[in-house]
Image (cartoon, rainbow, N blue to C red; front, top):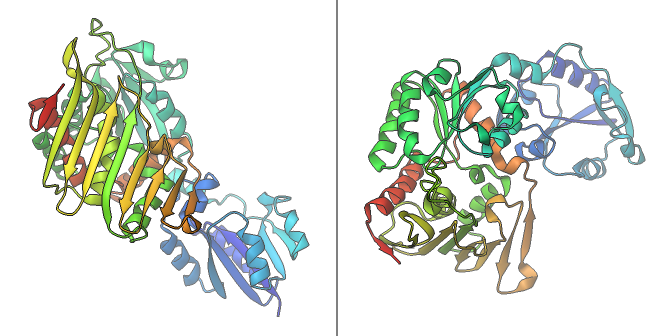
Length: 447
């Protein structure tokens, strides 16, 4: 019996896929089809896959060509599979000619001509063309625009800003560059907002009322009630509203959450997160308005994310201790927040005027998870135990700091009408609640 193996994503399964599988099956007696996992696809640049792994496996199974279906999860797996499954022929489309010649050492390699004019990428692009506008004053806007080029069907068409000095030449050349928010809204389908936090509520509200989808940097509002109102308004207008914290979309961070929740370190007893950076603020320059992007607004949402996602939002009590700048009492150079849960504790340290080690530590009854600085950009973490021989390291590629994966989730939410956000609304509301308490002086000690 001649065994044949082939691999693919098989997203939005089409006639070209089917013809290729039929020809692969014709090369032998038994066809094994490897369907690439979501995370492995990300490492290959295919981050805009529309269907889940299970949906793609079921699509391949339903056409009845494959005798066996396996999942491709890691680099180098092809060699392992060929050896383990006693494969005689490896085959793939002709657009990969030469790429897999190294497999000739283990089996025969055959490149098959692809069906012309048919591709999943074209189908995905034709399926949508989301005109997206950018809002705010930040160098992150350039990163966002660059990362959007990795996602099919997203077109940055304009920007609303009050300060052109933040913009690159590329952004200045967009079809619509305006200080008028309403002018931009009329020309786009969706918005990415990274304006100052005190503008978020009005901008999001106006956009949602006009039927526009919104991806907004955290915090999305400055009060709990405003935040809840915006999510409700999004539902009423059939719009997508997603909070932007790019760390949530990092593969390493997602795996960390799963491992911690699955009991790998026992019961979680403590979560400690630190995020700091140094930047001198000129309080005389009110045009810059950096005061609103204080330590808590700039770093708080990221640092709070693992605490609320691992321990939940129902803490028993908290204390906020802030070192405030004398020039501006609303600007915290450094803030520490301590939480007490019924069976756990947590702490957050954030600063834009104080520097500290930006690590994340999740402590459990059997071990702990350690993420080195800067943990919010991590592609690596460790699970450590009492016996060092049991320690395990985890490595995951991180492209674009998670921004491109965040854009994919946003676009998929728009297409499906179902939220694909990695951040629950309740977590977003809890983050805003902390910001609101800080400004209201609730549970706050200023030093």
